[in-house]
Length: 109
Image (cartoon, rainbow, N blue to C red; front, side, top):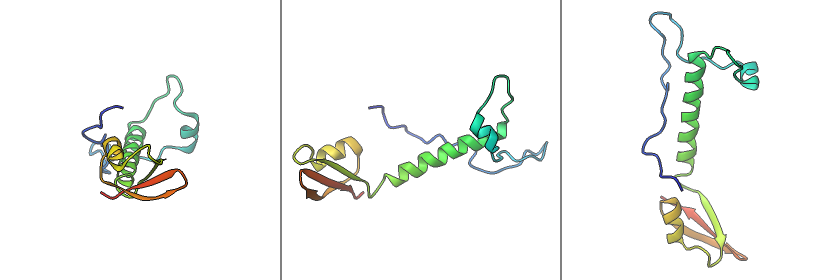
């Protein structure tokens, strides 16, 4: 497994205006452009890049924060213990319960 990055890829998270042009640093990417993607020799607006990069950053942060607490992991009974899950996923895990041959663990911190 790859090492956990030490920082998030923050890019263009602030909305600003270029003082020389007055244009915003981010604009909504047109639907037809999003669907077709970039074509050969087609100009890619810096505002599109900033918008896309900021959105990727926001999703990464959202998913990281969402997985920080209240995640649930299940394993075949006897296959994993909370310590193994802590080693693999980090945080503190507690056994929620067992259903048949499945143990359910929840991340609490």
